Image 1 (cartoon, one colour):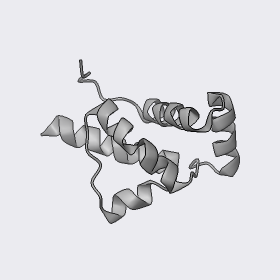
Image 2 (cartoon, one colour):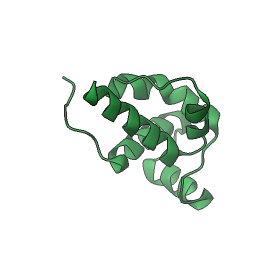
Image 3 (spheres, one colour):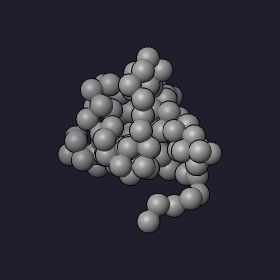
Image 4 (cartoon, helix red, strand yellow):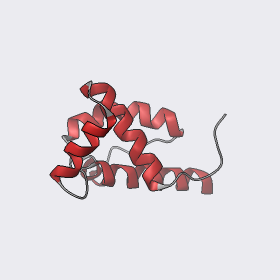
Length: 94
């Protein structure tokens, strides 16, 4: 059942990292440490974000539009998490 509560940004970030863990085959701590080492926004290869996009959309029952803003959001875990949160809020308001 879909929760009506809006998740916090950190929760979405953690879910994104969990999905990245599955792709990398490393522990969540290792993946998070690698991302944090790269910068505060947790920069990531945008292809990795694209690989988990469908899973994120299914998890939160949202659709991330294929536009320039969304493409820019795939550059880091934090920016992608913000895009997901915005999509959740929009879905809840409609």
